[in-house]
Length: 512
Image (cartoon, rainbow, N blue to C red):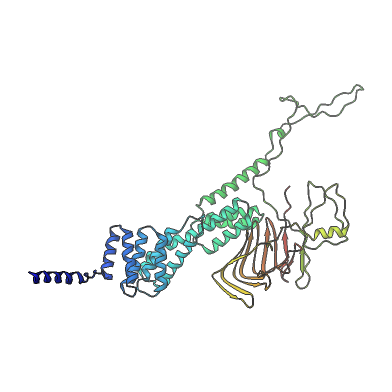
């Protein structure tokens, strides 16, 4: 009996010392099958756990690549398009030549289509969608996913065109016609197959007409009627012209008061002579005093004529003659052209009004050389400048930064667009002392715009140099020349033209 008890105790001891049975681990294939099953039953959170387990536990297994794609698909079905796009982007950057890349690019196009906002918002996701689908078409032109993405690509491009039209329409409605023209003409150039080209032509017609450029307005109007004869915007312009002609025709017809003959009756004076003729009565069927004729109504649409001013600086000895304030006189003179290119100072001289005393010639000359503040000014030296581009190279020792590709420089409400830009920094203050912008330069600040091929900014000297078909506008005022130099501190502009051309300035008088 004692031996039996000892044997039983020994068995218990052996059982208690034995190790537990090892837990069975899932292989990547089982995890993948379970994840796909959960995804098909719309249990997306659990499916995401399975696919992430494959990527974390078996990162070098071939099944990990497939699991990464399925993870993106699960996020997409869950309508978490930001995480889905991020997963696909990581896969594309890590394996750019993998066989599943056409499918990944196709899915990226779908994600960015879902993330693309309305035309009144930033279109960064729309641009990303265009980039990925364009890469898919160029790299895999015969792939079925490339063919399926054609419609989506056209939709992306149309949305960008609608965005430009939306901004241009806003500028027209807020009377910022120069900015509207830049936007809409750029839209026609970049998106010639847009569905709303007729609407853009209509707004371009309106903007040029409001600025007084009737020739350019008629050019866009003719194009609108020729290319889109059935458009509602073409019919609207036809109705406007017909209404204007009818109004002008009605004004030429004599009124009923003019058709009624008026006769005069002389009055006899007590001395037997005739008094002054009385013209206030009608003889005939109509009796009583004659009603005064209403003044002729002005047409609804009037063609505004450009007014050019003499660009020559006023001579110190010249004395301006006073003119009535109600009707300021605008003179148009040709600018004499000398040999070579000569700088021309732009000066705005307000007409004198009655009752004003003449000032000494020196004082008048100083005032003439100082135009109204803010007329052509762009930069504000007291505010920082932010510059964004596709690529950037910086040289710390030389204090030099080079920006390339879709450069956008922003300072408060000032925007400078160019293909490339060079910035030279100050060694003391680390601020931008000089900047050179090249290639399709556009400068926009409220209702002031400038376009040229090259622009040079010197904050130390306070100079802005615009070269190559430079056009500067401020409201309706316009300056054209091969080179326009603006001195910020003096608030003075100098226009230089080529030998075969003339510098031109168009300034409209302010309406009080």
